[in-house]
Length: 141
Image (cartoon, rainbow, N blue to C red):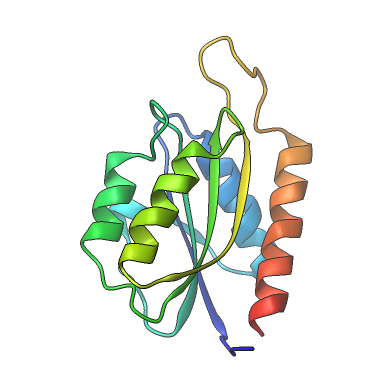
């Protein structure tokens, strides 16, 4: 078991759907979600990283953030909004593991894209994201 007192929720979104989930996670753990484009990686922090799914991949800004930062000894939980399959999370996990991060867990839900999955993420998705966040932080304390 490891002990962490600081949490950071970083996300990338084009349409704002992933921000809804980031805000739900942040609210559950008592922090503020930050867009990854403006974020600085903090020391001794359990990270929640999230992205929408764009052509089966996470946003380029999220991948750039992961690529350009040191994740050795970092513990991360991933979240995403897309088709619900979590394809974006698989790629994020692969890149993070190559950078020696520990991926503790993943949460994925549908996100509205054009006429598909209208109204998603919804309240149930936000609730499930909060449950995920609490589980991840409980395991890290």
